[in-house]
Image (tube, rainbow, N blue to C red; front, side, top):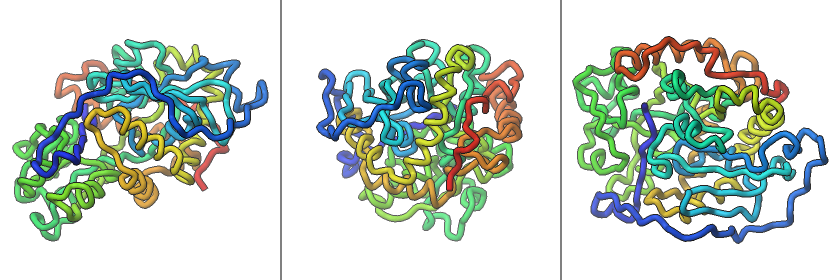
Length: 390
């Protein structure tokens, strides 16, 4: 599947090579940021999770810490601990300044779990309650590792195809930039298959060798390359000295990449088993994304801190984090559901469209055999309809 493989090791860019830093093998460390304790939620109140949820709510991300995951990290309370072996952060789960009575543990994905898909990790480790599962990934895993999305985070995918404006003068779309037949470099075949199905690129242009560094783009600016609107445009202009100029791009959502990116999902069985917990937790997750965009400072500080502590070779600056938030707002990547006006709610027609688009692609690739019922991939039963972006 089209998993995120972006990694920029800035210290190595002078030689245009990626330096993989040795992972720390130390024990847990405690953050120095320890403000006054948060007020506790009254017993049985809407914010009190202690009576219905696990004592530690384990949440599995699909990649390393970044602002696209900011809503989850915004829930981590002061005085958190960092496990540099597991690449996880644990703290009191604090929402709206209220201690919910349980802890939150957020685990990194990608290299931290051997690049395992999140559904596979969720079924391997039943301690995980919530996973970030893209809709296309949920489709692929639906037969053996079914997951059900319970609330969205980003509403629109930040996935882009980008290009050098000097090498493709006047191009404002992927189709225009790719018109000369230059390679479109991605880390998987889902994006090029979609582009091919739309007649935007020829099959001969598909190149799935992208390994996550800027090396090839810098050395051969005629190529088109995958990226994220919330990251690469800033990184290439400000943090890749061998490039140091803007890139052009188009959102893949413009041409049919209709997935819900990284919605909070549970194992299918837990929709029933964990219903009392989800009834209270899901509205907290809905509101957390809104609160994060309104005031991202704390979550971004946590993200930058734990990236520095994890020492995986992944780098993440305050500049990128701030840019990501700006892009989420500017490009309307986080919006209320257009059909209902509720934030975090899933649109049945959009989910069906996603299945109709990607199931044939996966069947052709041999990664999907059975038909998929779109309604099995999500539920709106725990959504609080009163929660809306202003």
